[in-house]
Amino acid sequence: MNKYEFMKEALREAACAGELGEVPIGAVIAKNGEIIAKGHNLTETSKDPTAHAEMIAIRRAAKKIGGWRLSGCEMYVTCEPCSMCAGALIWSRIERLYIGTMDPKAGACGSVLNIVREEKFNHNISVEAGILEGECSRILKEFFAELRKDRKENRRSRI
Image 1 (cartoon, one colour):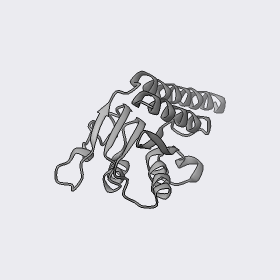
Image 2: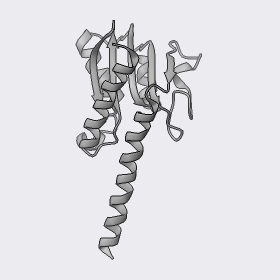
Image 3: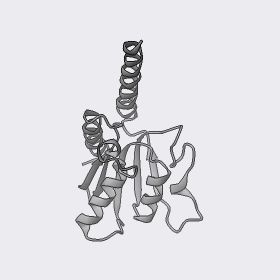
């Protein structure tokens, strides 16, 4: 599989999140050209603020390989990770990060912050952004447009 195929799989995970009413973000972890873990946002469903797609994928990958060090692994994520997830990527020793679309409000891998490239940490992650950016951006924009529409309709129905 190539980086576009892995990102398409992350987009499928994002769609699963969206179907649950979650912010549609998906993540895939690959090692040696094969997917070893997937995840999508479940913060609302699980009532867990740490249940981001990246965190779920990291937990599943660690369980699959039997250890917390994910050396030699790559993550493909539809939206730029937040500071919590960026920190987890560093601690888990992910080697390469592929991002679909950047997050100019909360991104911590190049937008607002760049935690994964901070030289003071003992591990840095190689980052490539813009993989299927249009599709990754679109799924988020459509989700939030629908959310705003629903909220507006709910306000009108209360009047």
